Structures are given as C-alpha cells and as structure tokens.
Image (cartoon, rainbow, N blue to C red; front, side, top):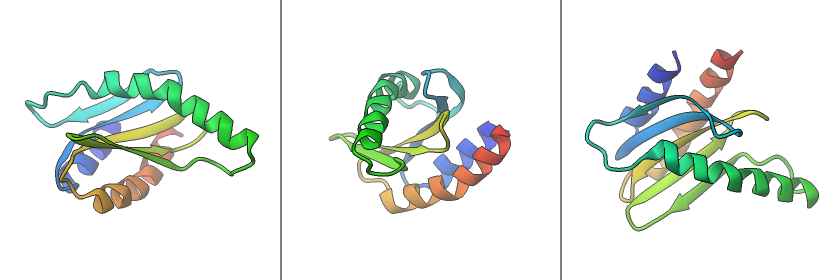
Length: 119
C-alpha cells in the first residue's frame, strides 16, 4: 500500500528519484526508488531524521508552530521532507532540475493518503 503511494509521488514528479516513509526513530516503513539511482535515500533520511528532531524541538521552544515541511538543496538533488504526524514523515529526492513545485504539491496531496494508511 505505502509503496504504491510513494511510487506515484516519484513517478508523477518531474525528476523524481526516490521516496521513503520513515519514523522519527530512523526506521523506514516503506520506500520506492527509480531503478539505477546512485543515492542511498534511506541512509540520507536516517541522518536527517536526527536533524528533524532538533528542528521540531527548536520550533516548539520558540513557539513557531508545527513544522510542516523542510527542503534541502544540494548541487545534485533537492530533498523535500513533509511531516505527516508526530511519528512519521515522508521524504522525496528529486534531481536538482526537477519540478520542485509539483513535488511539494504531490507530497501534500499524497500525505493525506499516507496518514490514512498508517491508521
């Protein structure tokens, strides 16, 4: 179930590389990657999950509101991370020249389906 949703996000995003549904504990629930991609998205997201926890804590301390989304740009990729609830988030990697706006839209749209599937 999750894999089909993640696949839809990746394939409908121009330049989509891979997507992973993960808990803040760093354990992946499911993932989808385009064939022959060179990036280990799961490892990237595991590393960023610790950073996400710190950002969430800082936003809470400063009363900035609930964290919804983070994007990270490198010279090769854009990583978009969308929080689903207090336990899970979804991450998408797109090529640097990929469709960032569509990636954000699809992650918001499909985020509701992922939340529903998580129960």
